[in-house]
Length: 232
Image 1 (cartoon, rainbow, N blue to C red):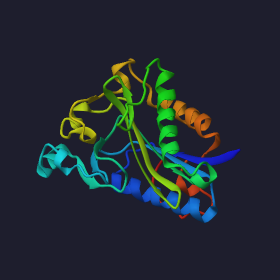
Image 2: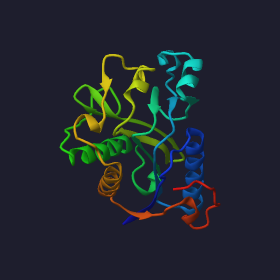
Image 3: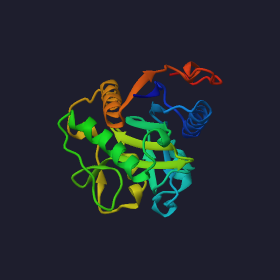
């Protein structure tokens, strides 16, 4: 049975700090020949632009973003433009696909399944949409997916909307797709419990990827990892 560490961060994490956490996890997985590490967090408000571009899908000026308290970053993940912020569960699996399956398409399908299984638990029927990434409820995207793979080790991941500020999505054309919208779990269930959803994501991840998850409350608990003060 494969084994992955999982670290959940309680405080909001800036996007730059999130990248650093991923880089630390990537290095740790490589150096220790691990199966993987799963990072679970919420970001401070940020708009990110993927490798497919998307600056033309930013509908306001950078000064306007500053007024809203939203950062702007160019990301190494796949995909176009998207928003991250409080009320959205972001999962960054840093997985050694050599221990799973060396197939990027397989990996994306697995991530989609993790999300679909999770929202199904709450009675929400979600699926995929041909020619588009992410997980959808009808014509509305409930989870965005964008990944990066180097040396068959993954970075980035998915973002599941739970009770996110939808007004912030109006500042962009999400993923460059103007004909469809976005939705959150709160559109379908009353007062979604973030901690409960995190637990269900973990269970779904374990089942879909056939791996055990070992909780590590901070990266200090990754044996041999250099300590950084990220309060989890």
